[in-house]
Image (cartoon, rainbow, N blue to C red):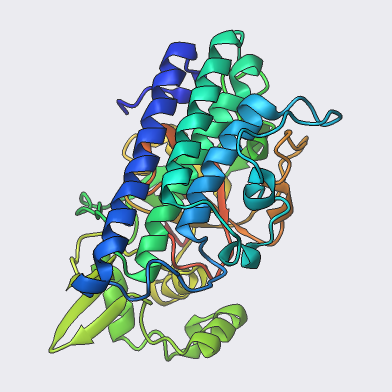
Length: 400
């Protein structure tokens, strides 16, 4: 990939990336604020953009973008170690508004948040402070740790802003494309170090710690994620009505949602369509299926006589399978629970991964909305099995 490795970036490259990320964040804020000012006249909104509905899968955009500024300010300038009191924020009440560790999710719709202009100023001020602090940091992995953390955190929230647009039917730029021809990639058995080694240079997320030997048996994995055309065949075979293709958890999810097709699909006048942000478009057969829960992915596998890869198989193929196409279209469900690796210990931002062990499913890869610098074959994402709002699909392995 042509994207520089920001996990090992020096101070100059890291400063450029922080500027790029903040420009991107502000462009999202400006574009959305401009649209929401005229949404009432254009009639494009499925919900009032000034007052987005309460949902447990999104944040109010004004809060989310302020939180991005707070996170950078806190970890890059204010944090002095767990045993000491942090430096004060440049913005009065910032901790009360934006500290996600202590601000309950459902309260974020009712806070007396700063307006758009004040949020823009806080985004600019927190970046200036972080860049000023970066100059004084040693050009070492420990010295640059929190600036790299803030960069990747911002990239994650920028992607989350994009799937908020999908959830609420707001306009946004799409990025799905036709997949290359698919085949099964034959992977020989072997042993490899799964996860990140203490000797690896650069930034490491705590849920990648530490590298440990894993063996995989022979397996065959698709070179690409599953396509719309493949999933459409399952829908047309009444896949959502056939209980034997669904796990008990999947059947419970079906009963709760009453779905008969993926959430953003419809069939009208003999045509399959899907909603991409604010627009309904004809389903493109060779694009990856997207916005699929784990339950839907597993049901398709049972119907097709395939299976999801384990997290270890996925990482092994990404590291050693030359034709393995990942990270440019959709996140991918795996068959593995999200669990700590041997030797795991939380980093200072302890809430990043540990609270989600054993309740979430491991997800790998990246999507069209993921910034390229986030992509790494060892990076572990994680979601609850019912999530279909994110840009997620799946690839499969052949049953042996």
